[in-house]
Image (cartoon, rainbow, N blue to C red; front, side):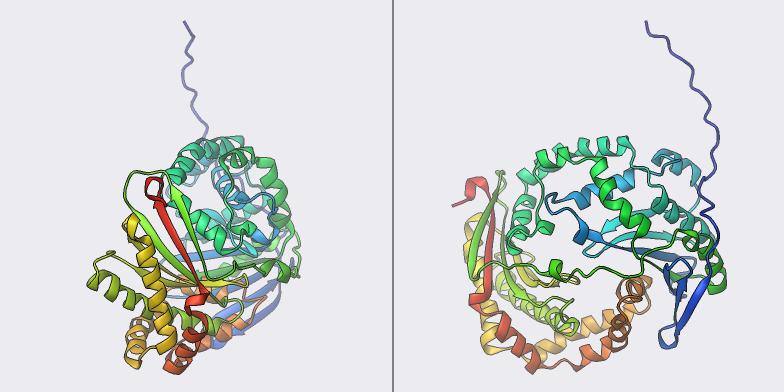
Length: 453
């Protein structure tokens, strides 16, 4: 009984974001000859880092690093960063929906996504050499006219019941509680309740993101298969044409501090499941990479050595877990870090294997490691270091990003390999003795509800 209208033929659209104002000019240019890097400052105070490479033919990677990040997130709205990233991605642009963009950009290799880190919003893109100008235009469009469409909020909230059901019925919920405990409930490690997440709105996100997207310091880094003269012209008419940006980053030192829980300690977290899978985990506090990058490198080796001892004892000798592992997680921007040991075990054996991991680390702290263990940990890592120098992602993330505001990144890149090669058994033993003692351990059990004590 309802009248059905024939479908209307959609008019073919063209990309609406090709002009951003008067093209900017280069006011300062600096060459980092030994690293093959060119740094520019544009007339609107946008900073630019360029590194042409031949690692990946016809591939270019980009990051626009924008000041702020979770340091500026409202502390009474945990998880708003995840909501904001999803809205940004699903909201399209002011003049084009996500569906419009898929049609308009069909056949072109461009895209942009937002991630939110400690002190920065990170707009990331990857493209081909031929589509680099379009990629720059797309990234600027996201900065100047993000869609924040109501359908993006609706789509995100439609997914929440399924997501929270997964948290309730899998070990994910326990992991979230463990992260929260390890930072004494720091707002950046908290996860909102489903009710809180449902109350988050597009207006909250717009209020938080808009000042950063339009005003905060902006640094564009590009690595890949391109010629500098051509890309400079494209940058002038896109990022160079944006309104003037701030040049000074706020001091976030107070927000970098994270209060750690008292140690030793033990916590059990549960989830609603009848499947007999559980996790034994232990964490030890270590310095952050922000505090000391060289010590952070040494903990990478210590974690590898502890992991080898765990595999030998827990997997090979006892058969308690197929893949026990250890990892160092020195935070790159906050004043904390942790070395973690973890094993998937039977629910009734979480205490046993948690205590065993503490004993293995304590033995490492008391008796130290051997030269043979150091060499076995170092050789594969050095192989990966050599490989990374031929990867665009390494140069983009580890060297170029934020280098205008932190020039020490260049020195760290220059000395990285020789520093790893210089590491000795004595200095690793000094660190293990200081940090991996039994009294420094936090022990966690993540078990199904029916198996909890």
